[in-house]
Image 1 (cartoon, rainbow, N blue to C red):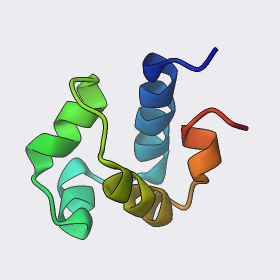
Image 2: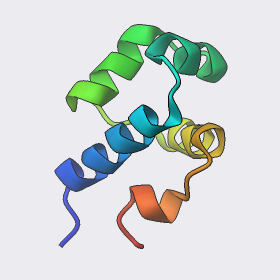
Image 3: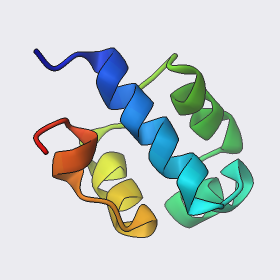
Image 4: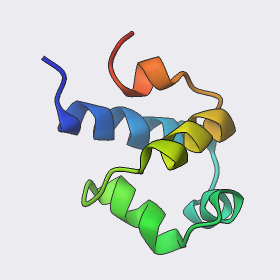
Length: 69
């Protein structure tokens, strides 16, 4: 079963592996660095449009993030 915790874990892993800072990523997404911090702590998950843009920026498949792979 896919859980939100597993989705969050994969998202955090992808962000860390990108080597980008939270500030850099936030600037590219036009969101606040605090929002990226919320994603990293698991307080929030990104909206679908933000998730799609995150995947594009991080060069990671949405299927991977959403545990379909």
